[in-house]
Length: 320
Image 1 (cartoon, rainbow, N blue to C red):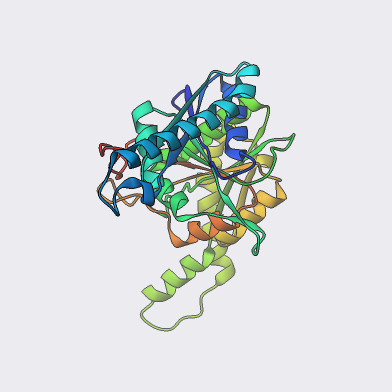
Image 2 (cartoon, rainbow, N blue to C red):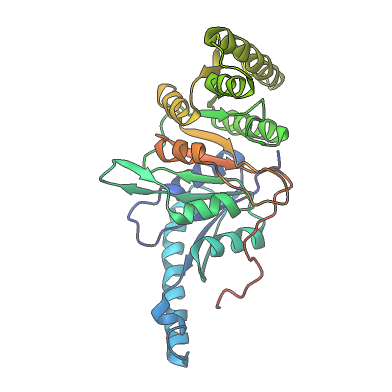
């Protein structure tokens, strides 16, 4: 795992409470990292895109950015008083996710924090389009923060796929466990490893391969599948020193079992990997994982393969 030296916190200038900043400051204290508070802002009516640009519009944009920088400096004061090294930066850029990715790439951020937004009707935090774009394009590990205070007892749930059923690189499981253990160690937390398998997949495959209708012994197939998954799961958890009582192998659908496990373990963060079929295709989150993310009762940390390169345009002029 790469050492965390630079943490980027995306600040929402419209929010009253900055949960991403709180979480980022906590991690920065734990690992001794530099913290940067960042706002990427854009307003189409001041951009000059709709009308011919003018010196007055350019002046207005500069005044807006200056005001945002002043807000960031105000937020930084109590953090610096705690002994943290804090930088601030406000830019005029769009779309929001590309502005974040461009700045993360330019500054070499090792970890990016961003708030998710609360949906009052569903009483849960929903991921926005910006969040999904960041999951697919952010070059650094992305920590999406739910609107809640940090608990006293911190638990990291490392969701791994030891059978690589979703074409996920095997090394990504190692990275998920390494970063979970590292953060737990410096914060005094614990790690719970998780993997779910669906025996119905094996039954469906066997049925599809049968030349004539057959009655399949579901219990036997599930037992064999569990043994295969448990062997690989125990190998990787043992290698990383995760005790058996902190390793959870369950039969069922991941989008149902992972949120349930996170709730049962009072998880602070679920750590999981972004899935890629190969290096030539863009990273994506499958439909199962999308349902997992929307229903998690805690923060989410997304980790990507070490070879990942962002598909976002990181060279474009911010003022464009």
